[in-house]
Image (cartoon, rainbow, N blue to C red):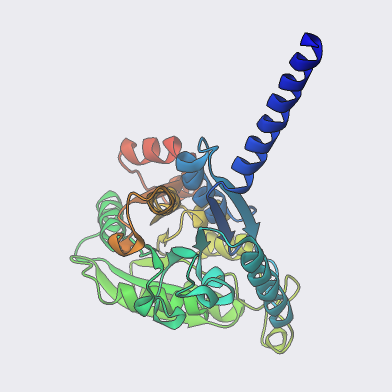
Length: 351
């Protein structure tokens, strides 16, 4: 009898343990991280690094990841289908917090859950207004804007100008493809003080031949070229009538490498991945900060430390420097050692 009782107690304990584990697993607070792009895009990868710094050891949270891959797939049909798919996932998963990274995640999915009674939204990497998504009047949204680090870009140009012996206030022109993202960046940049740098404004192009022509003659208008987005440059006019894709648009590395090698004036990237593409040096918003801030906001919400209306929307404050030493040497530009140390520390240094 004693043996049977012992077996009974052990069985009851095991069943209870399984029940507790299952109950805990199904009732853990849930965060869904929705990335607009895929991990082959360095910005996405490093936003994830920032998120992981805060969330990696939080085993009490059920964390789900979804990558929309809208950099590699840009057709209207794909965007429509991925939007429907993601919205279905969100409805079925019903996360406590949806961290939506970059504008496609807002446009195709997150905005449909404005004022949802259960789901809270934390946006990341929005470089324009949140009004198109209805976030400005929503009661369940907070997040962090991505704003180009104008002051840091100005300081970098002044440092380079001093290195090359340039006299007077340097002029800078921002060139890009004709993307909405580039327009939003310019709208912000033209409202900021660049002093003593003179911001010449924004030139956008449809095709790579148009881009090339401007770059070759850029010294007539400026002492620096600012580049950010050039992933939607078509090979020629005829390619514009076809669907956007690898065969019709020029690869980012081809654009950046050609520009760096042929520009008569120094080229400064405004995203850290511009250096990876081929530009000599870049000063961009810190993707690590974007991820860390969003993760901390999500933790505050699900832990009950703060309600979402107590978490104000933030604007990016930190930046990252990336550099390509061979390109700097080709232009005979020598910068203070601290820039190289910074780039190496963040793994953004290319010999």
